[in-house]
Amino acid sequence: MNPLFKVEGLKKKFGAVKALDGCSFEVFEGDILGIVGPNGAGKTVTLSVISGELQPDDGKIIFRGQDITGLPPYEVVKRGLTRTFQLTRIYPEMTVLENMLFAAQRKEFSYNVLQLLKWRMSYQVDIANKERAFNLLKTLDLINMKDAKGKELSYGQRKLLELANALIIYPEPKLIMLDEPFAGINPLMTQKIAEYVRGFQVKGLTFVIVEHNVRLLTNLCNRMIVLSQGRKIADGDPKDVQQDPLTIDAYFGE
Image (cartoon, rainbow, N blue to C red; front, side, top):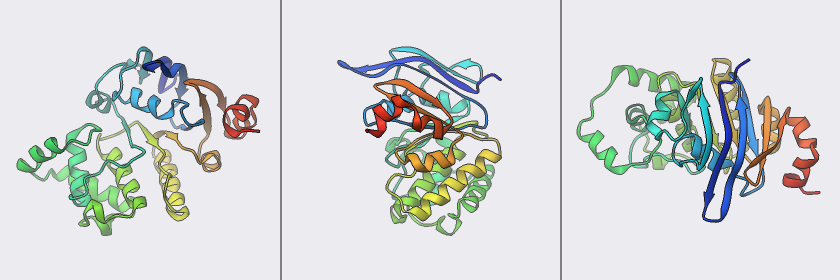
């Protein structure tokens, strides 16, 4: 079976620091792939290079059979690959619904106030996008918050809104990358987001999740890879990966 997505030999340096040093892995359609590793392993840098926010120094990124290496974020989105961030990127003075409608039209990942002002000056309701927004808000149990401003949401609700934005930014996303979606939220919200991810997987979405909560990923993901010093050192069933000597040495300590 051909992979939906693969990276080959990704390299990225910041000065003398090798954030990625030949990182390679594949993602198959329907996967919920977890990426774990110690701090500084290159997890978030990997997502940023894939999404076009950072340019790789070397390597290839292949998505749905096309080379997307080095494409800007808006071109990556056009191909059906979207993402969320460690720190939520929502507009605090906009309502939940406005955040989603803006995400549906901006077609990129950036938090850009100038772009927001231009959008507000020419704002027109797109009926199709509004219907999609309402459906997603119902699915994610945010419909009662549609008129609340972003700053009024709890941190967990902001995480949910960012997931909604990632889902609406492209009409039919194929792959969504989540960067620490469970960090800083309570156990109830953690469980809800995990259930939503499973639900969207059943509907045909593929996920790549960077997360420190290894126990949660073990129960959520069908595959897990471990990064260390910018390289993949383990790949496979989450329970097997945790028992790998290289994983234990690099990530779990003794």
